[in-house]
Image (cartoon, rainbow, N blue to C red):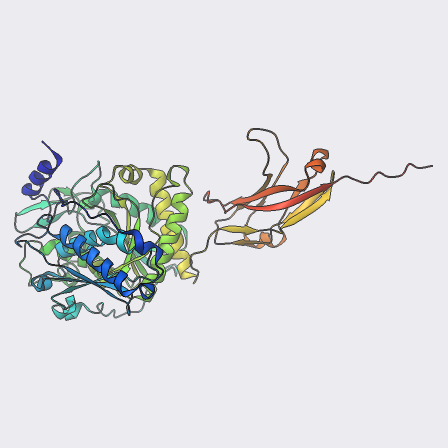
Length: 516
């Protein structure tokens, strides 16, 4: 049986509110022209119109490749137009989707479509993302109460130790489907990964990293021992909605926030809403929503970060998290080439929209891709990615942004044979984890041979003010002078600074006159 038929059978089994698509119409080859354009304002009118037609064609092909919404018949009509003023792309769908614009199905569809369109908009500087409309109206036409996050009575709270509270939400978990009247995970297993389960691993690691950096983290899906009797599942596998119902029975406004809802996916939708609503109740300083990703195209890869469109503090936090996730992941030798997006995604998703504090959705990788799936199950990747998130939050709190780890030295140095030539390291840029080891070695040194080198270790940032390497000139250095030394540094997380080169000259020591 071919893959398409297998997926169709999976779809008919209705194990999820949506299933990965199949039999997708032939993709239009992306026009990478956008990658060479700095901003929409720099595009000519004809180029912009051509790209809009291209994106509209791809969006319609994808939207009509299979049925994305239960009970809704195809076709779906989409028109895409750039808004140069907001530096965004307006994606206008049929008005009939307006009343379901906040549904889980629509959020999943929008996210998959965003990923499908990324090749056509990647490279546009300051691009602020896709803005969805339904018959020309935004979602707030139907849901005006969703425009602003719920008011929080108290100011941001501190823990008993004075540390800021940070909510850590592991994506998804089991929920009750009122249409099929059974309990099921919110995502399907793929490549040996069930998102509802593996996000718990990432959450526990992020909890530990935040705790070690003077933060008071709170796990949203902290189920403990025992079994959720209605579903027969371990408590930890349940969606946040049910855990909060058990621990906060007198706060249905958090876990049962849609009491009048009658759709089959009402518990699913309440579960999404319960995560930010609980963070609001905690008075959290920030909230992180941890997910893995899934799309129809199994070749799609990489980590991404999503924030609520237009929210300045969330954009700052998300940018820091994306930056240092990349730094920490690429520091691992097995994951130097792991794709991490260069661009922060701005969207309109309930987990972020309903949060009254900086809120970030972190998609660690695509479990529908075999290489990403392998990484997602690797403890070194898990640790590195969450260490990057914690570092991003710490630097965000300190008002620091994304800066590459580099060292600065003079362009040249010189000394005499048998002297220890000082190579001062004038400055370290970026925010390495101390102690930092700095090494200088001769560039021309053959691999595997024994060469003179210099190294030193700075225990903290203050030690760098008087830090200098010492290279001992030998007789053989005189003939090859001046020669190139490569200076590099490594921090305690195994993050390497970008190597720099300096010119070093070793001079012969003057012959002292013989004494009479």
